[in-house]
Image (cartoon, rainbow, N blue to C red):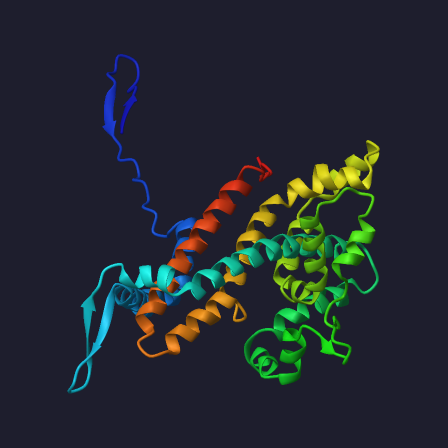
Length: 333
């Protein structure tokens, strides 16, 4: 840097070279880069396990679905490429697979809305200021713990529980079965909706939902917690403004609560679909496992599994695309 200094009267200005201090280089990384590195370190075990363990298994499964296994005389096997034969056999030859798949999709259409709606209702109730709120939240989450791990295996081995779930009724000797396992019947709901001009499909749906309430409660624990987190993130000032303006509780729910938790509805719907398709009691999963245990059934079960996987992906994409048009994202500028 050059400085002009006046030497006095009659003097000449002299230029003095002064070296300005250079800019210090940033030796420490920014906070964002540190967070990024910490995030990659956190997910590194999953990434390594995915590429070292799961990717080879996925590749072998795809390879088996397009081949046929030939057992060699001296031991071992070789793969013979058959193209789309396994897929066509699963759809056209094994009719039980298509029947089971269609039945599973119909059950999914019944279960998903009921689980999401019930979990939202429970979350709204448990978000109120009531005595013992923490205890009630724990009670509704207990089924999630009881249906996982060792406890789930013990429960599936319970013969009496399996009989009660699968039994259509008890023969009382009169030639008719008493529907002991049902809470209500179609006739009960028809009497309730007699003057409301409700179709038979809705009546049957309500009956199935009420009779399946045990399964719905068992599978709504995680969704309930997600809805609770969404409800607690809504500012109380918004509800105070609605109360001052004279809005009723019904109007507040449809205008404030439902739009604000709509992102959680999408998350819970996607989670519920994946959970329903991969559950141990899923009929399609059980059928694929049965086919796999049969002789030379591994290639056919691989084809069934990949068709099932593609159907799940298509359903998730369709549901996410439809719900995304109704999602409200609050701007935090």
